[in-house]
Amino acid sequence: MTILVLNCGSSSIKADVFQSSTLQRLQSFRVERVGTEPCVLKEADIETRLGDVGHAEAIKSILNKIEEPIEAIGHRVVHGGERFVHPTRITTGVLEDLQNLVELAPLHLPANIAGVEVCREHHPTVLQVAVFDTAFHATLPRRAKTYAIDQEIAVRHGIRRFGFHGTSHKWSAQQVALTMQVPLEELRIVVCHLGNGASVCAVENGRSIETSMGMTPLEGLVMGTRVGDIDAGALIALAQKEGWSLEELDLFLNKECGLKGLSGVGNDMRDILERSAEGDDKCRLAINVFVHRLRKYIGSYAAVMGGIDALVFTGGIGENSNVIRSRTCQNLGFLGLRLDADANSERPSTSKTVVEVSHYASRNKIFAVRADEEMMIAKDTQALFNELDTVVRPMGIPIAISARHLHLTQEAVEVLFGKGATLTVKAPISQPGQFACNEKVDLVGPKRTIKGVRVIGPVRPACQVEVSRTDEYTLGIDAPIRNSGDVRNSPGIKLVGPAGELTLTEGLICARRHIHMDPDSAKAFGVQDKDVVEVAIDGAGRDLIFGDVLVRVSPRYVLEMHIDTDEANAAELRRGDVGILQASSFQATLRSKKV
Ligand code: ADP
Image (cartoon, rainbow, N blue to C red; front, side, top):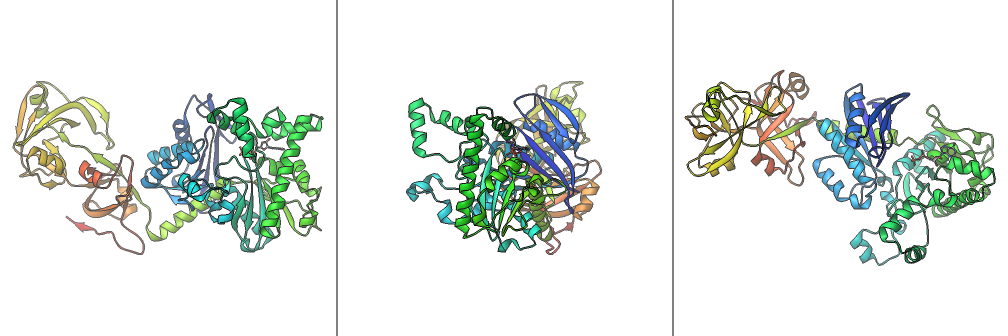
């Protein structure tokens, strides 16, 4: 079994598959330029052309290439707002809450959510976990997360510092503590995550207490294309003098500044270093500003923590650029930090996650750590899976909502739709061999008529009309709750088709809620054909436990619970939702009786 970690960015997708107990990395996929240009799916050295596809198609291609069954899926989610401060199991309610957070991270959250939706659709029974970039910074003290504005206004508009890159900061801090063989709870660490986006974090006793990104990822260090810290007065002047709208200003600050804006040659630090070595003055200035800002942060975070035990470099620049590390560490001797030039020429790798680059005489340590947010997300997902496993095993059952429909015999088809008529396929439905038909009939009750009720094919040996309780009130007929196929002594009803009418003497039922199961699923759930069980729905504010759910086992079935529209509405259910069979290793809440 495996854990899939999905990092779905606005134009790229990273997906890593881990063995679920050892967390050994089994497969690794990368897709770039999603939705903008023809894109290519890379797995190791193999490239597959995907063409002009969006996130959904690209993720489906990845899912199809995963070789072992997936037990849980961990999603990187950029922003968790005030609410999500721990890895969280994704339910329909959680997904709705995430959608409400989109305005906090409009560039990133929609892609994260798209990833979750595609995985839920394709693996509805698999545990899905959201791991938030902001969560590690939930421990920021009030003084660090507060901007100096009227707090009534701040609270009204959610203006506060959140911090990002939390998964990377947490991973680096943990790796360094392991290497130093000192409990994380006893260390003061400054982590510099220097990638395209860049941030610094002060990790005191294992908790983030200061970080350079703020309400958005725009604050702090000089980044690839983001400006980082800038006087708010300069923004006002820029907008006034250039005549920019807020959208134009936003685009400028996020996409045209930072290393790109300063150097004039783009955002890639390798190019900038190369040109700077050749004497390009703009590139030299870009590096000087980048390093100066970083040193300011390191010094101030050491001040905030009253000292520093370890300084850590991570991210594309932090791991790979010995020049940036050495420039940053110049004159940090007053913090007990002294770089070793030889050690600093090494870089971390998959086989060596942590490289110590400090001199043997350095009082405190300096490290380069290979960023591995995917591994951290896999660990968090594994932990949540194991936690749930000990309480209630999350055996999800996809739920299908059956609208009113009817099954007909061939004779009835010919009466209603004309001599020689046959049922025609509109679309297949989830249970193998069954389909929604183009044909519809009207149900005529003593009270009212329900028009346009769809026939489900193929034809059956007996007619059966399945309606909800609300429909019964509309029709004015009291029908019994029955298992499908059991229409003995049920009320009849008049059917009106385009070619004729037919009055059934029996056949109107309110279908009993039931679960279709293949034998393997039945074995996994520990139930048998005709068992009656309870199913809990983790709904959007209307959680509900359905009792009296009949289990029907057959190799012809696909795992799915069927309920009618009244039942679905009572639990605020939507297509694609999942119910949990009430069974756990400690608590025997599975109530099962033979019927
Ligand atoms: P992201 O934040 O998009 O995940 P990365 O962590 O991969 O980005 O970092 C990308 C940055 O790392 C780029 O600026 C790139 O130039 C830089 N980088 C990669 N390798 C080196 C290197 N050998 N020397 C300097 N910078 C490097």
